[in-house]
Structures are given as structure tokens and as C-alpha cells.
Image (cartoon, rainbow, N blue to C red; front, top):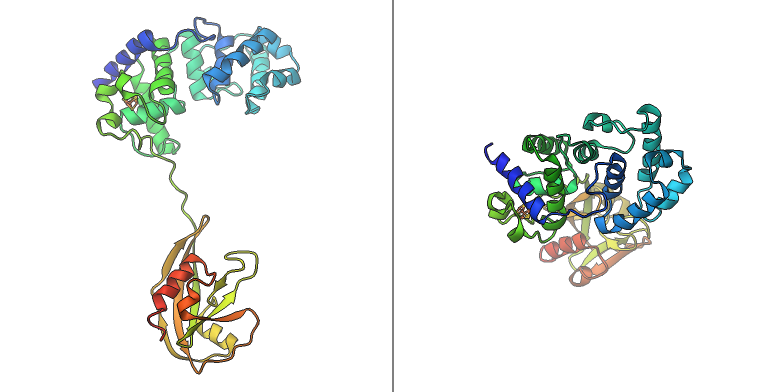
Length: 345
Ligand code: SF4
């Protein structure tokens, strides 16, 4: 993979020239500040984080101060940032570092990732910025950059795709300048390679970017696959006397509540229930219909009955064939009725 050093090199050069350098948690090697910023940035935009970060530090200037503070005070200073598990983990993490590590954050990504609230990517970012350690980050922004640049297919949340991305992120790591490289990846994902309308014209990776070269920025990363919907089947008996169609009103609740539909069930059972006898019967092609939570295959049977019976059961309606399709029936039933209007006569 000869392109890899070029990837890191271009990113580092761009970060130095055009990346972000004056965020309040930059220009420091203080693990406490870096850790705090990384946790705050996990689900929140930079501009929102800045004033919280400053107020938080004013109230809890050191790891020790945070560890000794009551949890309520920590939550109070977090209020508005959301995802409060982060605040609880922050407090637990501070106490753990004080109790187990004598108040000093461990300097490897592996050890950092054992602490509350610090996942693999956050641990790598802290290790890079606070200790200059060479380890790979892979947050949502970085996944987007890698999927686009390397044309990686598949939803990045899927285990196999994520594994591939971690391997790639590890292989891409430069031997030097890990801080500028890590910051460069973050800056690129946050400022140029944004989810909508990436600014490829300004991107240092544009010349080798698979998404840009193929015009596929809108397709990569791949969207979350739609869940497989459960399949159901149901028989519907279209009973006609040649001029009219027999419809039943569904109960008010449940599928198609209150609408008119042909009797549901197996043809012989439905005819017996209604005291009808078919003179002609034909099985029609099934019709598929997708609901939000399942797919239904309608299996229609057309039954011609004669003479026109006087069915008096409550809920049963004989509706003229030429108006049945517009008589308050659900869409797939309308399609079935349209299909049979020529055959029932
Ligand atoms: S060229 Fe465009 S799509 Fe490719 S990495 Fe750069 S900003 Fe993202």
C-alpha cells in the first residue's frame, strides 16, 4: 500500500496549514484537559462544547477536584450537554484514576480504554494528544473519511466493516507527527468531509479519493441496511355475484381498522361461514404489500356466487363492483378489486 504514507503526509501538511489550532484544549499536553474535551466532544459539536469546557474547568480545575466533588455538582455543570451517562462516567473515571493510578492518567491507549467512559477511539485520541502515543482513532467522522477515500462499501456500524476500518486506521498511522495526523483526521471529518455537501475542492486527499473520483460522496459511507421485515400471508375471498362485491368492515382497532375488505380466510371456510356456494372459483396471483413492520402477501381467491343472495349478517356489505375500489378500502385491496373488475361479470 504505497499510497498510505502519502495519505498521512498530505493530511499532516493540511492540518498544519489549514486545520484547527486554537481550540481551548489544544496547545496543552495536560491529560485532564484533553480527556475532558474528548468526552465532551463524543456526542456534541465543538462550538457547543467550548463554553461548557471552560465553565467545567473553572469549577473543577484538576482531576483531584473533580474526583472529590459530589456527583450532583458534576451533573449540574454538565446540564445541557445531554447524554448524562458521560457525566457519571467522567466522575467515576476521575475517582478511579485517583484511587488506582495515583491521580495520573495511564499513558497507553490500552490502559486508558479500561477506564469508565473511555472507548477505544477516545483512548487513542488521549494517548496521541497527551502522550504522543501512536494509536488509531475511529469515530464517526473518521469512518466517513476512510469509507469515502478508500471506497469502502457496507454500513460502518456492521462488525465486519468496522473491523476492516480499524485495520485500515492502524495501517495508515504515520511513524511521526501523530498529534497533527490525529487532529488532521478529526478536522477533515468535521470541516471538509462533512456528511452533506463535502468540500472536496479544498480537500488535501481529493486526488486519491475514491468517492470523489467516482462521484459517490452521497453513497459513502453506506447507509444502515433496512431491517428484514417479517413476512405474513393472508387469504382474501373476493365474493361477487357478477355485479357486486361482498366486503366486511374491519373492527375499529388493528390492521385496516374500520375499513372495508373482502372476507379474510380460506375460501371454503369463508363460503361456509356465510352460507354461500360458489358456481365458479379461481385462484388469483398473489399481491405483496409492505407495511412499516411487516410484509403481507395477499392470496386472493375469486368466487362467483349465484343467485344474488340476501346476506344479512351484520358488517357485510354488497358494494357495486364499479365503485368498490373507491369505497373506503385499503390500497392493496383496491388493487385486487381493480384486477377483478373485468373478470367477475
Ligand atoms: S475528496 Fe471529498 S469525499 Fe474525499 S475525503 Fe476529501 S472531502 Fe471527503
